[in-house]
Image (cartoon, helix red, strand yellow):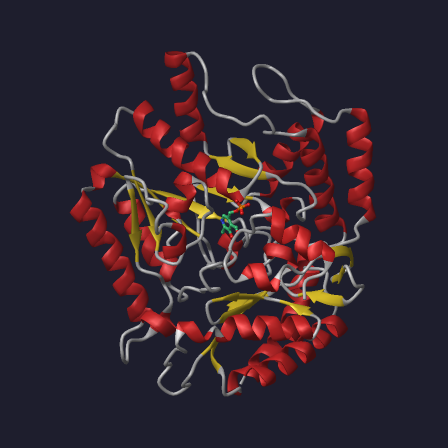
Length: 448
Ligand code: PLP
């Protein structure tokens, strides 16, 4: 029986990533308020937000400093844009801070509103850059199967998940996919992680050679894959991949939308995973999700090409009404200040052993095939047979059932097929981690 609020929801809203058919009878979980790592539904029931929303609310749900920053900026200057020769203080300051923090040289910062639009900007800049250099054929971008880069036309094309392509007539031209670096699922019988990494790097090189290196412009990857099932590539994977990219003059784009800002125990996921990308997409925890904001970190070579194009065309024809929104930028500046002042990334790194103590204990659970992740993000893959790694029939919806049971237990997590993801706010404390896994364990035992 749906409540009044649920009925009104079902009658009016389209929910992303939801079965729009079965949803009509189940209705939504309506969340009303939050405090720390806790959120409360419209009946007052409390849940630990084990997914930090959608991998984003790093500072939890009641940061008054951010609220006050938003209030002050809204009353002083609620909106300016960056088109033409306009600007605002917070956007300038946030760009300066990001340049300072970035683990690689950055020339300029381009602001957007979402991870999807940041990756669309990446695609457009790669194409623009190669046109400026007089290499109009060098346009193909290689992404990975099971990678997630968003849902706009270009970023959904980069995404390597069937549901984002089927019947949307995607991917668009010039987007290719290479294998997913998930050893547990795609390693061959008896193949070591090292050999698996070598095989995937060889496969990438073969793809580039087959397509023609003069047609391949860029490669994009999440340091640790998120929405595709929390996939951690083998230790030497990026070293091998980067050698291939260098040999063929292919740009490396790091999609740090989830991994950026402390999630893997370091400020950027690239550092944790031994990546040295040319450019990065950032979003989510850049404002702890208190305001929609994304950033693309642009290297000097690409920016120089953009200047050359302006000389030729007269204007850089890309940007959003809300690029560099002063309220979002002020929140971004405050968020980064809090991360630094309160050593939030250090705290997350110190909480990680407690998180992994519980996760390691779950490796023996009869339903758990693999536990994977890094820092404060993890995925647990549920299987029908541990020894053979046999998956459950998708129709059984075991992951979805476990997620629903966790919700009953007062824990929000996310099921990606039969992989359950955990990605709590970075401010989580040890006792809350213990509580989270008590609830998780009860749900898992009931899911059998
Ligand atoms: N890139 C990554 C790695 C993501 O995880 C996401 C969203 O989860 C996106 C891009 C898309 O971001 P958004 O939903 O803000 O468009």
